[in-house]
Length: 211
Image: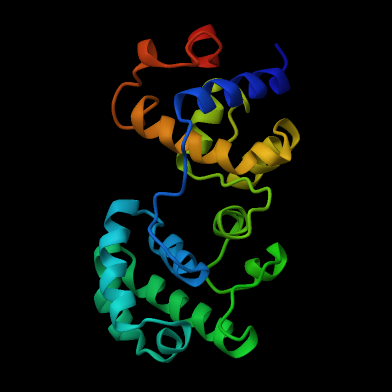
């Protein structure tokens, strides 16, 4: 089986296992997702969803968050870890959105990458979930599962995994496929406990079991 055939097999099986899939960060506006995904670095989405309630209650729009005192932002987001750097990036990012984009999140991938604190993973998430464009979000679940399954071989660099998946996946499947890898990584193909291979919908095609 080629890697492209394996990818198609994974798409079909994961779609059957997780018919409804979506980002688990809570948001109702593009700028809020941009803030939340920055806070999610080395933090759970569940914790971020709790913390941003206070943050967005105090600063309900781009302009107010851009004008906020960095120390005040840090005091709220500290439970997410890396509070100083995250507060700095959030304020800087919102300032750019306010001053250069009229409080709107740009729809261009390269422009997103220029925003403070926004890397390829965040930019892809915005492109896929907000603007409904093809997007490959290579978070830790995606990287771990792609290596275990055999879609990539010993590749840990997020950009390299992303580039590999662009070659393997139909563009219209990219965004949901990455979300389903997160679903599967949390439910079955876990990181901190023994993977439940006997329950896995991919067990007969997974590279981990075929070695």
